[in-house]
Length: 392
Image 1 (cartoon, rainbow, N blue to C red):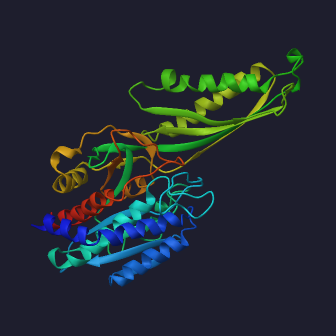
Image 2 (tube, one colour):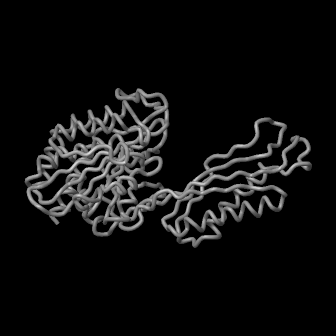
Image 3 (cartoon, rainbow, N blue to C red):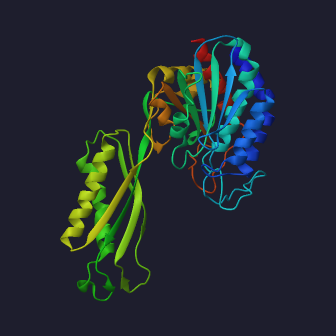
């Protein structure tokens, strides 16, 4: 049975897969700076005799495994970039770069996809068609997926479906989760400033306090999801940073804030910033102050194709057992630029659990850590998806 062969091969290559993860984790690189990571990926692919293209969208790498004959092409994707976080976990492969850390699992995504490449390369005489391996830069910043697509990653040969996985701290080890339709939200960043009349803290009646105005605006921003948007629409408006003033007795002239908007409805990406600006306009205008507001759309939501969701669900059921696969899981308000692939080809995105002892683990924080054994689930799942899709 092919699944058993996938399991055997992944176990044989496990030490090499884990070693790749450790090397990448020790040397984390931020978005569009993944030069050493890309070099390592290209070297591994070359050692396997896999046709490799480098320098795609800057640091992206693409490998191609042809099967025994013509057929469809399936794309498997991993992101490569780290985060500007100082690691505070004492592991043997701890980051050696100050202020840089793989705090989201991308080191595992790369290692898992390279593991799948090792397995699929030995199984190429069992399937028709092609497996395209995409190692993508800058998921955490400007969304390198869009640039890779612009540079032709979905062509030559033409891709028929795309799949990606994310190691997921909110899901227990050995568990897999996905759902048809909306899977991850679309992010829009925003920035605002309030300009008012500052002065002495003892005489607030002689000022137009921008801190008070900012507090009012932030409070009213929360009325947008609750009162201005259909309650059946998932929406998040988060102010994640605010700054104004330095002294205890001085009311400043300027307050700055920034944050993120999350939604699955792309039309709301225009509506919500407009509502936020209306709030700022009304609050500042009533107090003789002024404002500036800017918003910037990022990548689209991840929308899983129902058929491809079924392929991924059945593939992981073979790997971890059907009881460990939740194919009706709740969507996440987190964001992922894998959504760009779904705008062009039928796609599915999968969460692979890494949470330990029943305790959810937060991503993007200095204590983020997970066990190497989870690489086997990732490697096996990706390989199984590829052979199942091509067989279908």
